[in-house]
Length: 288
Length: 157
Image 1 (cartoon, rainbow over the protein chains, first blue to last red):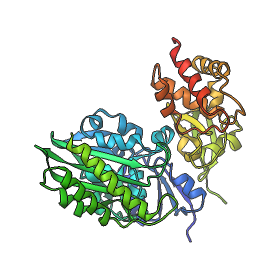
Image 2 (cartoon, each protein chain N blue to C red; image 1 turned 90 degrees about the vertical axis):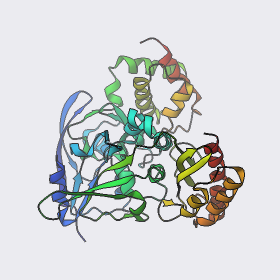
Image 3 (cartoon, rainbow over the protein chains, first blue to last red; image 1 turned 180 degrees about the vertical axis):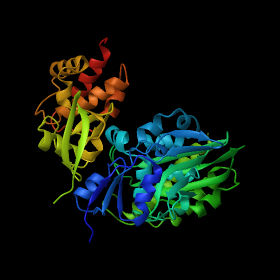
């Protein structure tokens, strides 16, 4: 059992990934999750607590080629108010708008939301339907090594990801959607603020003359991780978005998810809501 | 022995240097180390907003922030609003509208309302309600608080 021995606030990415080499590091960004989790004893601090706030490479929202890059330290408020995000990624703004409370949106970061890997993480569903990639940095030898992987392969379980203990999430990259791209997000909860989703749904695709292509459907809070719903996507791909297609896709969605009973809802209710709200959202997309 | 760290930051306009436990949250630092008890402990997990402070110009829950993360930043608490003209107007509006009953949520409400009024020049009721979503009040039923903030925003600055 290790004990917290060091506090470190690096000012460059190189310093941070060098510190991560031994893997015995707890990473602090916004702190909105780490504070309560650690104080409740659900997270034990490792040897070093590393505060990544002062690393400039982790900040900012920029257009790089045909991708929008959101730095890991971007807060939920910064994202929902940024002109690039508002222009190109309204579905992400929508999800951010339903995220916790103003105070938490002002502190919580997108990197933290990704690394927490909650099945109900609010930004994860829009990021999945937008084909986001996660940027990772590490220092395997003596040189900074950076790579990225699709967000859809990043999550492995509640709070578990494919990020190794020696890696740092530096940001997320999202392809700028085409002009005919439509995307919708819906979060079902008992109140708009500060609620953990009972379920959440994201739908996206390119709409051409009533036909949806490059379909992406993702669900939150129905599995151990946020998930893409591939069978539902296939039921919609290249089909005219009429009432019959929508009803069929919603039924497939209900059968495709395998949620659990918990304090927020029963598995049965979640499956019914996946059906009903998938149907509702697809109806909205058809009218877009 | 718990790990300590020295930090330096601006608190209500004054430079402060304090030593804090690395695992301590900013709320505990403000109340127990520095002795500013205007910021309240309600739930300790970001649900109630009683501990709302402003850091670098934005509102956040001090219970969800590490004290060490205050290092180098500008922190304002309810005590720091004592000599602020906008906050004076807000206080008067709270009094006028009867927006204070037991008063426990009030410091957090005022800190968040002050942030809303900095962000939106003349916020309407919907805007104020959205902004105060993270602040719980068990006495007033919110109407008087929302009215007070809307009225304060409606007056010319």
